[in-house]
Every structure is written in structure tokens, then in C-alpha cells.
Image (tube, rainbow, N blue to C red):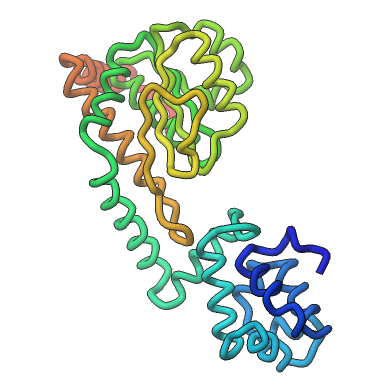
Length: 295
């Protein structure tokens, strides 16, 4: 086959080992599977054979030639490759399909809940109170806090900036300032903190923000999952957590829980600054009557 680079590694190894035994029908079936590995992992042998234009039994024969007892076992192998998230299976669509595969037996909602609970429990052993305190101390001692996340982490960075502002800190959500990013970053100094949120991998724009922070001497905090753990230069303080195993729901609850813990700890060490600011904000909002006008 001339599309070896497109083949997920586990399947590619199987093809290499049994290439001398493959027939023209096998090649047509494999071509269909490689063109759309996600769909191939979800379909039965009859459907795959139909799309390949071969006899319905051809999928079973291919599976046996590759060393499986039948097509259901081969399909389980494809699903396992999908869940492991390597090669061509490493895509948003593949991750969603993998979660659907996981949910087939126990139910969708139950599988999501189990995944979230497991990920949250793992935080107990991977993040310490000292990690949280390192973040909160840096925030407390800053002049200004720049918060930045892209993709799925953007919503968390926006919420974090909002909560810091209500707690009496000058916080800027860079994600909402994309049209004025140079202006927002131009006054950054060594007295400031940059809090980065990165899931799966840091974007090139985040790397630029990280570089500017290094040039200006600003302290950098990073809350990442394990895929985005490597940053260059390394942040001053970093918390890296698993948001779920491959094929499981990639939790937003886990990083949100850590961000909430940091903000709560900040309130515990800033001599009442957060509590006074929250009280003042509540009184202002009630007096101003802005909420009624926005309904």
C-alpha cells in the first residue's frame, strides 16, 4: 500500500506482518478503513464490506488473516486503537467516537460521570496544597494579572479573570482582547503575573505571550493537562493534571476545580482583600440596579 503514513501504527504493524497473505478484497477493505478509521471502528463487517464493494464475508476473512477469530474481535482491536488515541485517531472526532465506544455498555451519562469522578480523584494525589499556595501567593503579590487560554480553556480563563476582578484584583482576560492584544501586553512589567491555561498543546500565540512575559520579567503560572505540560521557557509555577484517560471525557471540571481552589486560597491569604471586594461588589450591584436593566 502507498498510504502507509496515513495508517494508525497498530493497524500498520498488523498489515506489515501479514502483507504476503492479503488479497485484492483485503486491500479494498483496508483502504476503506484507512480512509475513515473512526467510522471503520464503529461499523460491523457487513457495512465495511458494502462500502468496499466486496462480498459480505470478506471482512471476516480479512480479520482472520490478520490473526483475529472473527470481525467482532478485529473491530474491538480497532476500537481499542481509537481509545488509545494515537496516530490518525488523535483528533477531536476520534476522541468523541472513542467516548461513544466506551459508553456502549454502561450508558452515556454514567460513563461521563465515571470519567469525571476518576479524573477528580486523581487530583488528590497529583496536586498538593503547596502547588495551590504557589499560585495564590503569586497572584496576591502582583500588580496586574493577565489570564490567557485558547480553545476549550478560553471559557475557563474568562471565568477566572471575572472572579479575580470581583475579588478586587486587576485582571485582564487576554482572550477577550484579541483585537487589541499588542495594546494589552505593551504595559506588562516585572510586577505582573501571566496565568496560562493550556489543554492538549499550547498554541503558537500562547508561546508568543509566554515569550513576551519572559522578556518583561513577569511571573508566569500555567495550569495545563499532561498533553500541554512542556513549555519553553518553563513557567515559574505549573500545575499539570490529567483531565481523563484516552477515550474518556476530557474534563473541564478538573482544571476549574483547581482554579477555584487557587482563588479560594487567595482569599485566605490576602488579609481580607477578596472578601471586602466581594462585599463591595455585591452592594454596588444591588444599588446600581444594572441587573434589572440587563434582563
